[in-house]
Image (cartoon, rainbow, N blue to C red; front, top):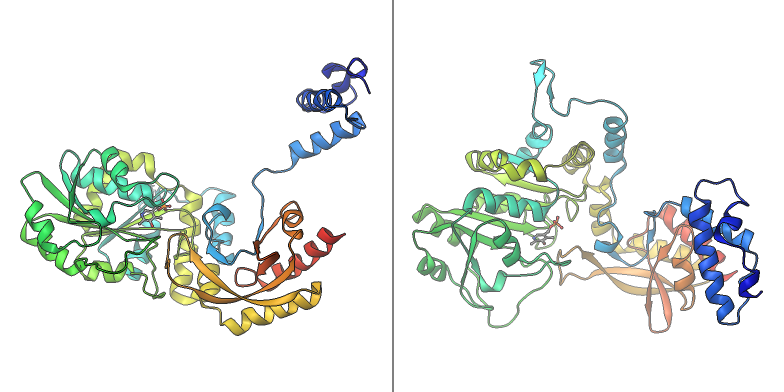
Length: 424
Ligand SMILES: *Cc1c(COP(=O)(O)O)cnc(C)c1O
């Protein structure tokens, strides 16, 4: 085909009565022009137009299968929701709800009331508040408790979580002023004490989520920091990051943090809690109330889908934690993972390989979870990613590893079908 044989965008678009045809035809003609210039044949333009129209109607945000062995995978949507949590979302989203309606009083109610009781029960806190994510929770806490004042943070905790969430920047945006204390590897309670002046309002402790400092290190315990805060009538805010509700490895729980004397504790809903994206604030009632009344709260609050999914997840945290996918994957005995890998290997004629899975999401950075993968040909990784549903695996030492700790049994069956399709 020569350039002058190419139909115009309008001519090509007229071959379809699809309302998206002009936009699709523009892409097809532009691509064909480039191919002709390079001496290539663009192929059947009508068929290409139809492909383009099909692609435009395929959802862009898609379900994928996570065979990476990273449980809370930030790029892959973090925590998969439990069935019971999804049921709550469907129930609440498909019709009207009492989101901000008090059924007993017959008038306006608070959206924050729906999960407050469960969060109080699970953490021992006096009060709780839910916002859009944990970054928002930390921002709101600092804005409400330290605007125009100083916040003391250890130099060892001025961290970046990922995607540009840097504690010093968040602090500045909240309207508070950062005052660094101690050193990168060693900070003592006395360093905080020495830095306190009339401008100081808050001591902020940030959990070292995604890294560890090892060797010659020292950090005050939360209890020591709480003592300093009490003596000087300051607030102690603890950003836990993951914020496990049940005991998982050495990840601090919100309950332990409050018991040690933190006034406000912030953590994520979609890390080790295994629920929807959310920022959860628990702590002393009069301080949580200050956060609730702050104008930023209105901008950062969680929506009804989040609250429904969170209520569903919190109910399971008490009664059936293993129905929360994140907790189930973290705690599944390695024998069960190994059996899944063996079954998958048999289905696809792969090899079982011992691997190490990770909690991910900046949680338990040093914890290696024993796991098993099914190893197949290296070149399948790209094809699996292009499949439907896409399967995301890890390429190592010339092979594609399908880690079975992050697969359900049903997903392992889907992966087997995907491997066959990728080989065909
Ligand atoms: C993950 C994390 C955050 C951010 O939480 P999001 O829910 O992703 O907004 C903040 N602080 C710490 C310590 C974290 O680990």
